[in-house]
Image 1: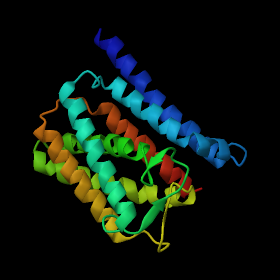
Image 2: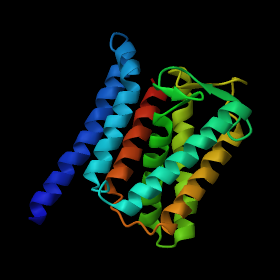
Image 3: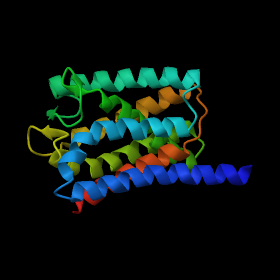
Image 4: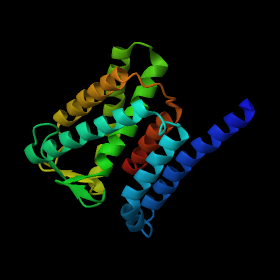
Length: 213
């Protein structure tokens, strides 16, 4: 039984990496790149949902409430950020990431949460102290965003009005991740982070590959 579970987990992990590997190959192909860009929001929602399904969290009421609360927080902060420039800096979203409300694609809040869960997972591998995990999760997502930003701008996910990525953006990523992580622990959610960590790492490799191409 344990052997079968381990095999299933390996297959699920492989699926995550295969999706992003295909994404890398597609973005590096001049022929396929336009198609890949068009598919971006759909791939993000599909892979994110797969990770949630693989992690067996969709039947956990505490998790779902935390997920909804966190989605609303991150989405509202994004709207405030786009409108005021006071949170992340002055930026605006392109039309690549799909349907938007108030200038913010709906997929953004969803991806925020899945990435943060990967950061929480990495923190949990290092320490059992909740505050320390929140600190590590914040640092992890900042590192992720550092890899994400150049590719995201080139692909027209969003653009910075100054033409440069402000330090304020990375500080906001850290503080928001720290806050959402503390809320996560307040809800006393117990989950496996394995697939969230793999998802975060797969996305990280994806953006690094595009940045070096």
